Length: 112
Image (cartoon, rainbow, N blue to C red; front, side, top):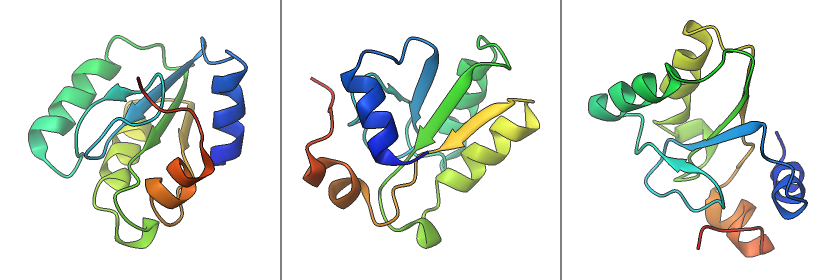
């Protein structure tokens, strides 16, 4: 999912059917749930526990933004877990460079 798409959904109050999960160091996006870095085993346990309460049909968007996608240690294990658990609408927020450049610098909605 492109950042501009999620940002306009948040601004338009159209996220009631979306679960936004931060699997990186900070939950900066407005409305996101802070899971913590998915590269750490205890946070993967936390993610799995959180997802057990969620419908497999729910749209789930994960993001990290700590570094460029190619080097991110968090998004791959989290996305793999979503797929293994059978989530049909799992999406990755396309933060190509990092959360600063691709979200914060664009003045997209952030947590209070």
